[in-house]
Image 1 (cartoon, rainbow, N blue to C red):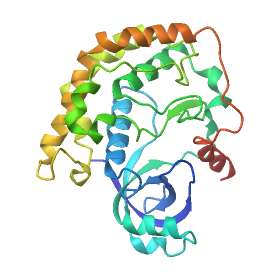
Image 2: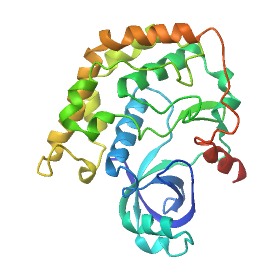
Image 3: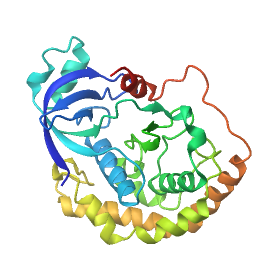
Length: 281
């Protein structure tokens, strides 16, 4: 299981995206960006965060520490925004926390420091999990102590929002044309050779064991957690086995993007608020 902490103080909302994550202090003296169980698409976003974040960690990709955060509804009392206050109250209980990274920099501030090997591994990983949310407009990456950090995987694993159609996602091509690392000369063949053999049933079972039972939702409310975990593992293993359908396109996109480097358009929002807050703290 993930480390469990209890929230002791609600600091402020982070107003990026539609889920209104909150900055909270906990009883382990840590500070966390908390994703709410009652926000947006509910607990499936939290499941995606855990599965993708911990799979990335197992593959030695850099991600912040994840914890579960027990939140009491009374912590919402001091929040003046009624919408945020109600969200906290509806999310009473176990939520997900990502370690807060003070001093982190926006991705574009250090994009030139991403080597082709790491860029290739991140691109390959995002194609495996179907991550649609790592573009130049919204890279969901930060630099902390000179090291890239991957954040916000709630938009990945889209298949679990409609289990009857999950099979269609197995061989679906991955559109890497707007990926934030496609112009960093990503070495996709090397990434495939290094990472694909490591993703097996044992690894996925270990990752899925970290997801709390009450967050798991299958085709019906009666489906036991063990069966839902097996669904996720089967889906990801099938996606891995179908690499012939999506890996060539990934390699082509990486080659096509290697000729230059662009910068995010001015005025984009994305997750810049995370970095701005990090610098102020």
